[in-house]
Length: 464
Image (tube, rainbow, N blue to C red):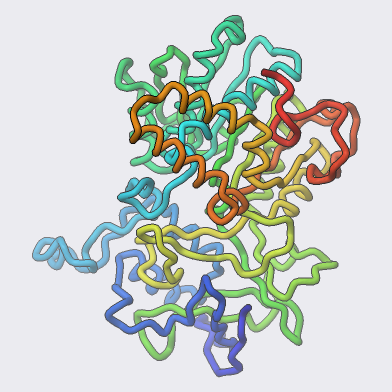
């Protein structure tokens, strides 16, 4: 839980105002009192220090946005310094963490389910086909992935589509990837096309890259969901919402106060958390009946959910969201990852991933009744309902090589073990109201009564 220290501090703006330093004592946080040698001055940190000195403390949401997705290659230092040195931390390019690097895999800072086991993506491919069949087998659909990583998940889904070509043979498909990372988009293109077809590039266009997958399906890249053409679509967001910027609020005797990030007055090149001295505009996102003493709200997630809900209500399809998260119960979840280990969120910004658990109750509210929602349910339950045990047995029976069998079993354990990903990840879906035969959109998928129109994953897979 957060602990407030009633010490003096200053709000760095034209009209200086007192603020309260906010010391994190939870397992994900640190007070910022790390030794100087453990707090390298990265280019992003220099950029943030200059920003805060100029405009005052920044929200956690602004901090996350700068650290993760700032598109600029920020050079810090005088030109002559860069020419003379060019290799020290002060002179390195410091764009957002996601923009210019590949952070996935064993050599990166974290690993995702598609990188662990091919079964994960295969079952999601089956989910989309199941929903396509249940909703009437439209003559065409778009598969839209938000934050596609290395393209591994889309690649596994497309392999299932190819294997079930007889089912989809008369369906016109296209792939649409929403990706802000220049580095990852290049990796995705290589994964999906294997350079069999040349790519079309147009840096200034909403569609900044186009290609053809190795199976002959058109694929396009966008920086924003709103640029994706409207139409009957299936949307996929795997570990996407957890990196969107969150505003953090602490309940105090004076009411809700937003958490900001400021420069530590004791150490000029370090950051610390502080509380705003009065109400801030983002406070409007807090529910009137909120009982927690600390909340995290992600307005950007709300905007995206509203866009998805509007599209699905108008043109059909579905959205499947898989992420770390909770159903409106957790408080402090803002954390960093570097080299597969928890990392102080204020130390060496730009070198580590920042994330906060998704509040699925907030996503449900933001859908505003336009569509039906299902979940969240635990990944272990979802994958079991999708037939992961059957798929594992098939692959094991086909695998004579001991190392491959061991890899399959280890991947299964990582995905399903409650102490690993099995209960840490949740699945959540948005579907047209009519998909559930008029059943209330407020239905909670965790209730035991069966749905009259089963949705794969949230109940046992009916289509084989």
